[in-house]
Length: 267
Ligand code: MN
Image 1 (cartoon, protein in one colour):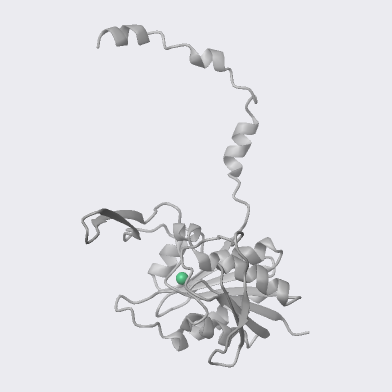
Image 2 (cartoon, rainbow, N blue to C red; image 1 turned 60 degrees about the vertical axis):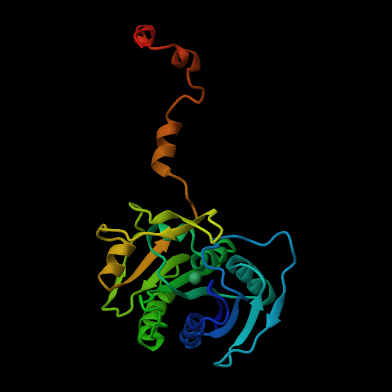
């Protein structure tokens, strides 16, 4: 039986990136697109719980069966796999902009793949660079790499959740880990036309990257493939605290240090 591949994104159903991903994916199985009706970038794993969702057939160039949903990427995957049984694989993207390092926490593209993993399915997120001139990426140039990555990952059945970033002009593929050393979140204050304070939560360029990370590979124009997992447990610290007594000796801790009185009186 042919695989069933559900395609989602966070840029919205009319993004050129999703059409490109559907095109490549259709070489591997039956494809159905279920994606947000408007852009949902940076929505991370939000779900819609306070209003109903709608699932509407949408004509798209390329003739793919496509449905738009008035919700988030995670909603689309939940609904898409509910209304199309026996989905084998969920692909998300191709996002217009990379999702590297700490950006994984905010990414709606990755959240669609995570939602698949939560449902016990395989999820793979694809993102690419967008040039400074903001012209659309040349997807035809990226597609052979997306196809190669899919070939590779379809064989690696143990990998349930994968984050793939494809640079503008790839020169190879690297297995990577998520860069966590830096965070580019930055608040920029400004004024609105009425001179009231406003704020932009934006990004600042990061410098330097650790070898072997997604940012390192992407910076060197390699496609980065990062296997991820849902378990966020800090194993090292859990092992450490498990070795400690469960009730700390609070009374002993509350005692002021021996020289504290002296220090206070000298002020
Ligand atoms: Mn996006």
